[in-house]
Image (cartoon, rainbow, N blue to C red; front, top):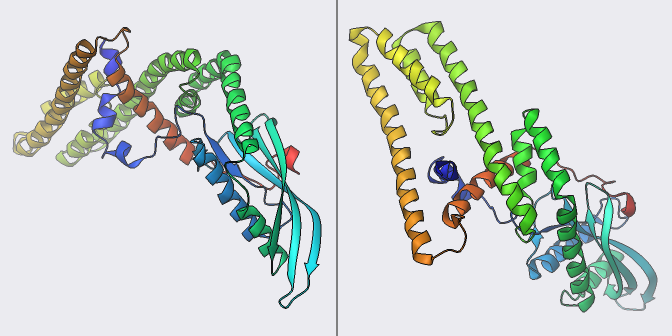
Length: 348
């Protein structure tokens, strides 16, 4: 059962990273707003349209600012008519057709599409277009229908492709791409319950492999540092390095052996300073383990109090899910931006 708690420490330590990171996009269906740069109208208008699309998705509760998001709401604009209104001052009136699409970036497929017309007036074509964009009714039943249809098709995608998602994650794990595997599995929304829980179970194993491998790398580096110097300075550097190993990593045993090796090697006149560092190391490990014990007891009490019908420990599930998602967020931030002028074949 202790494996259920292996991710708790990441939420308690690591400089409160979770409190500073937006985890909202994980575990739910989200759409990023996108308008191609080669859309053929002024950049100011394009950016304003992106902002308006974001208002649409936020109003529906599925907005996202992730530039690498897989699913997007995109727009194409066609100028149907353009009339000059005599002044002064002279005005331009444009009848515009907006075509909204919900799409999958990876497969280049469209889930749903609608079109509607809006008229805009301004001192220039750019101002007329911005005026038309302002007039887009985000509560329009057509807009709501495309979002509903797109959302349902995204759910269907995960439901029908769950086995492929899991297989791809396992392949990535075998090649050492743990963060990518965690990212892809974490993106499965909670509403796809069957697939979601399958991925959650797999995430536990993949994350354990990740911290085991990373722990061994750290121990190897620590051994090299110690072997090269064999002095107090090296001992201090090694102790700091080893504390970065996850307490539940299988590399902890090797770390302990190295610590003991260093302790025996140091001369008596060096030992006082080393013992202080050793105490700091042991105190950190003890603190982490005590925090885990407290969380375990709290979770058991909560489970009894709420008389849960399932054996799943929801309190700790929430903790470890955040741990997975933190890895996924870090992975996503380090990826190159996917947005290009030819991002979607169907929008060229």
